Structure formats: structure tokens, C-alpha cells
View (cartoon, rainbow, N blue to C red):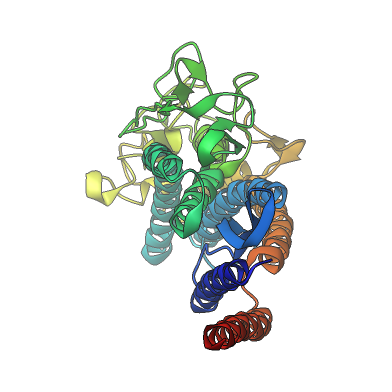
Length: 488
């Protein structure tokens, strides 16, 4: 090797070492930057006419384990779905109350039974009459509030689906733009690595909403498909399509062949959970669909079955001889007798009979004297009150749609309903905990491989410093040799 070759080699070493120092310094500076993946300098031998001429800088590498990243994203999507369901059941369970709570549906049932029992012992007491009226009114209010909560869950889930679809579509367009920029940089250099970090964050965001696979293509670009095989980004963006409902009536449902609620499609292919081979099964989007189409409707259906059961129990001439067999009883469906074939939404329509309600021109004494009484009855007559109490405490076949089996009293039905939601909450919480634990474990493992370790980077700086000094020493030595030659 000639002196000039040695000088060129040393100069290239200084240039490469300088780039390594820049990259290492950048790693240290971004050690706590979210989404930053550790950079490495890709160095190669510089060959000229078959001879080595020092080193050359090829590009910047990212220490990312793509397979591990995909596994972590899948785990995160499963955890996101489980978290949505856990929050939904926790909200319902909190509002419904447990059998030992001093609020909620079961507590309202108990208050009615207790108030009617007290009034049956002292039927002439106006205080007990008002207490019985207030407890019945509170029970109807409790049903109405729970119906509103369940329906709001459906509306909120539908709105969350719409927001999620917008987020996915926006992220896909941003990734498309990043693909173009990365392709223009030929997939190398610090600028390209930064763009890849930005793209990775967008891929992570999408995967929390809908499960995806990303496939590297030429010049550093990626294509994106759902785990079930529908393209979302292949050169151009294939947007998710969804129409929010706005208002959701009690009988609203989703059906692939037509319904009041929208599903989600891409280029005409149905991705709605539970609809076919392309249906999504994880991610927060799947969780929102589950809440809108199954969790909340099931809650409301059970609530309606209990409300209809109450109306039926407290109706009929066997309870109140002054009232007609088919006339509205103590509790009504918006003032009417219950229609067994039309109980959807009855929990929101549950009302006290106007004859009992002072706000509608009635009087609580009708609980004692009868709804159809034309005159005030004997003050001490508790026959109708005892009939009401018997109706509440008698064991009857659990109503269809309640999810309960066997013979149940009215309060046992309420307790069973509360227990059902409580058990569902416990299961949802356990699933959320286990899926989140797996996601956190994989995230930590990924960080251990791709995140910046400042101790390691500082050690690298020491080696870089030594390499820089060595190359500088070579240049100094060559200079001294050239000086000697000049003096000859």
C-alpha cells in the first residue's frame, strides 16, 4: 500500500468513525424518546480496483426485531379488546349494584317488598302508604336509569367505532405518505430511520384498533393487510367504511343482510365481527362491536324481562278484585297492560298506575283499596296489600330472556341478574389482566432488544474515541514520513 493509499484509508476511517459518533450520540439523546429504535452504523470495506481503500459508510440500521414487534402488536390488540369489554362490564356492574349494596336494582326491589310488608301491617298509615308509593316510584326510576345506561353504552360504542375507523384511515394515509418519503431515500440513512420510527408508531396505533400484518416491499415501503387477509394499504389506501347510527332505538340491531346498525367493510368485504371469514376478532374495534351488538343488548334484554315480570306479577283481578283482569295493574307499560310479544324497551317505559300516582291525579290509598275502587275502603283492610306481597314473594318460573333458571321470587330474580353481571365482570377483568400481562411482557422484551442502553452506548463511545485517535495517528505518521521524503 502506498502512502497515499494509507492516507486515504485513514481519512475514510476518520469519516466513518465520525458518523458512528453522530449515531451513538443520537442514541443517547433519544434514550427516552417514545418509539425510538436504537440505530447502528452499517460499515463496509471501500474497494477500488480490487484493492482495499479503507472503510465506507453504507447506511443506518435499526435494531428492531420485526417478528417480535408483530407478536407484541397482536398481543396488544387482544388486550385492547379485553380492556373494552372489562370497562363495559365494570360500568354495568357498578350502576346495577350487587345484592349487598345499599343502592341499585336489588336494593330497590328490597325496599318495595319491605314497604309493602310494613303497609300490610298498618294499612291505615298515610306515612306507610307514601313510603310504599315512593319505593315503587324509585323502582320504576331505577329501571329507567339502567335502560338509559345500557342504551348509552350502545351509542357510545357505535360512536367509538366511528372514531376508530377515522383513526385507522388517517393513519393509513400517513403511512402511505411515509412510504413515499422512505422510498425516495432508498431506505437508508438517518432520515430514513427516523421516518421508519414514525411509521412504526402508526402501525402500533392501527394494531391496537384492528389486527394487521405488515409486509416489507422494495425501497423500504410496507404493505398492510388485516390478519384475515384484506388489503388496507397496497400502493393506495383501502379505507374502512362505517356509518354511525347517532340514535339507537331499543329494537335496533345489526345484520349483514340489513339492519338499523352499520357494520364495517373494506371494498365491499364485510369485516364486522361474527360475520364470516374476513371478520375481525381482536383489537378495540372488535371490543366496541361486542359491546354494541352483544353485551349491552343482552343486559337490556334481561332488564326488560325483569320489568315485564314485575308488571305481570302485580296485575290481574286475583291481586286486585277491583281491577279488570286485562286492565293495567300497579305497574304499567307506559300506562298500558304488558304485551308479552312487545317487551323490548319496557324497562324504559315502566310507570306507576296513574290511579296510585299523586303526580298523575291518583292517591297512594289505592294500594290498599284497589285501583278500581270508587270509594274509600276500610282503613284496616290489608287483603290487597297481602296479595301484592304474596305476588312479590311467590316463586315463579324465571321469565324467558332473563338468563335465569328455575322458580324465583321477584327479589331473587333481581339478585340473580346482579350476580350474572357481576360474574361477567369478574371474567372480563381476568381476561383483561391476562392479555395485558402478555402484552406488557412482550413489550418489555422488545424494549430490551431495540431500546437504547446508555451504558452500552457510552462504552461504544470509548471504542469510537480509540478508533478516531488511531486513524488520526495514522495520518500523523504518514505526514511525518512524507516530511522525511521531502527532505531527501
